Every structure is written in structure tokens, then in C-alpha cells.
Length: 146
Image (cartoon, rainbow, N blue to C red):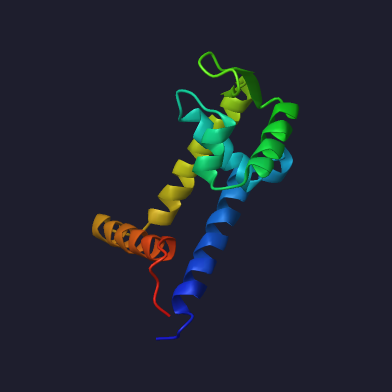
């Protein structure tokens, strides 16, 4: 087996997925990028959300998340309100426009996922999921062997 086969296959898969999502979402026309999609999706699925939650979920630094939130507030996709239990933080809430985008993203993800699963059995999809989870775990641990 080619020593780069997994990396090449993974790169091709990620590229095809991103291309399909961007195309279906018409992301350029909407002004959406991948971080916007992740942020909108995450906030839509949380009861409450703060910038600290976003940092933890997205694995990005605080400054990058602060810039992302500022941009999304300017685009009127998010609002920030005082956190009732913690005056040092603010709750992030989707505006009506943000909710519509999150719903569009969810619909698009379902559509793209259906395309990805076309001509695959449930067993093949389960095998793929298990393999992908193992690869993710292998890359996420510090116990790697060279």
C-alpha cells in the first residue's frame, strides 16, 4: 500500500465534502466560511453558549473566537447578552437570520450526507465510522510511535 494512501484519500474526501457543502449552501453568496458554519451549528444545538464554550468546542484560541463572534454580530447572525450567573461572560444567541442560516446548514448537511451514503450499505457506513473514529483517536493522542 502507498505510504500516503490514507492521507491522500482523507484529503480528497475532505475536499469533496467542503466543495459539496459550499456549493449546496451557496456559501460565497451568503458570506459563510467553515468557521461560521461550525459556530452557527454549535450554538444552534446548545441551550446556552458563551465564547469560552466556543473556544473549547472549536479548539481555537480566544482571540480568534472573539474576532469570529464580532464578525457574526456585525453580520447580525448573533447577539451577545449578559450571562445571568456570570457577569464576566456573555451568552451568544442566534438572531432570526442566524437561526435561518443554522437551519439551512442543517438541511444542507443532511442532503450532502445522503449523497455521501449513496450506494453504501449500513454495514459499510458503520465500518467507515469505526475506522474514522480510530484514525481520529490515533491522531488525538500524545502516545504516538514514530
